Image (cartoon, rainbow, N blue to C red):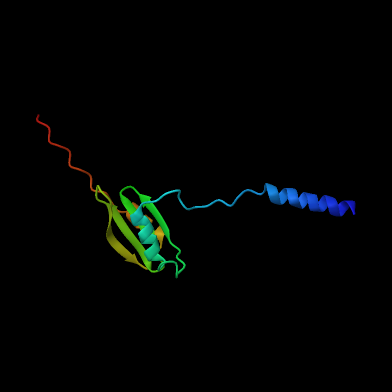
Length: 110
């Protein structure tokens, strides 16, 4: 009898001490983002899974069919291209391996 009471009390203490589940949803978000997510999930009728990352001035958004690559234009991000059949990792690698054009230094007078 004593073991049952100890077990019940231990279970109650352990359950009460369990931390609340951590959420990934932000505390606030812009209206345009909320509308985008709503449209993406067909107003909650379709489960959505995606990955996204940003590197430098590029934003990558992976879906089931490929990766959309966006570039920052000073105000927001606009789609630069869609990489059909690629994964997020492949798209990021492609842009990391793209040679950057170095600016030509100004000519100096001798």
